[in-house]
Image 1 (cartoon, one colour):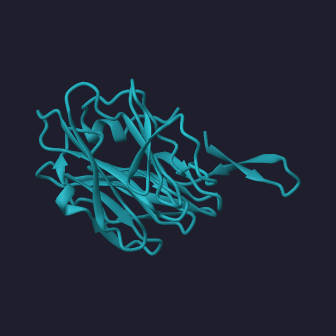
Image 2 (image 1 turned 30 degrees about the vertical axis):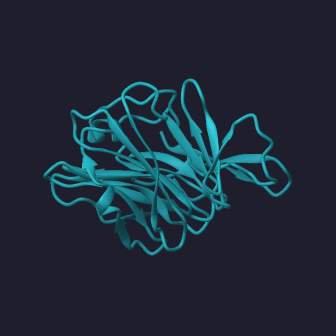
Length: 227
């Protein structure tokens, strides 16, 4: 059965449009009805974008490696991760034309779903996450603003109480979620989530979220069916 994406009819109502394409899984949707996801061509998984009936498969981590896209911005750039045969994982960005940029300094081990760009804003700002090894509980969160993508650390946490999710908006404000004390980072200043926000949206294009973080094999998680 084909997947469907809701599209505006221009009258304020939505209609379902079938995605007839080889996208194995899809995870995010932008306002141009472009979809970011993954194509599996055994033994490799590829980051991919579906747009107007055409699926574009992007560079991956090589044979016996993989890749996946979890966010997409308004320009059609996709954000996710690549993994190579040595089990090295890298948060990654693919430009609208498919140019791959790996965040090599933020590399982590494959056996973590959260070695990736976690979320992106409509204009391409991003937050990402990495770990130190498949046995480590030390988690590194970072952000980078488009178009230069200079990496800025947000927080490094070990054990219980570390952030479980993050989102970023067009102005670079970051929402940090955890089980006890969620907060905002506004121009680098930490604010309680109960504080009054400046007049800006904190919506992002990502559709992935989780209440808690659990280490798990990247390749296995990437291939789970969408719900």
